[in-house]
Length: 168
Image (cartoon, rainbow, N blue to C red):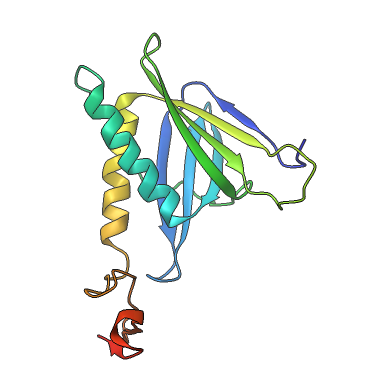
């Protein structure tokens, strides 16, 4: 087993995502709190985007309104990641009406150890709030190139589809 801790979060009172740093250099996090214990994991921007997209589809398929999520959606301080996420999986427990978000630790390819895991059983309201927060984070990022759809820095970028010319 990995040297890093694994987590089972049965009913968090806080589940969110956030980013720290300037656009183009932001570090993204997934964070949860249950009974005062805060768990923070470092994720990639694409993890956040993909999780939000999947949760959007899942919430559309489940009957009934998710309800309102209460509370703050900001990251809780101090933001100290337990480990980096390599992959995410999502499931839905109809009997408990909970969305299961499972994160696996990023590991070296040759590592014989089992990766650390984190399982968060969140409400549909928390899932809907996560989607809203993730969408706001994605809008706050760098603009995309109209030609290749890759992120552009404030000074533009060398676009592979424009024969190496800088696009602004």
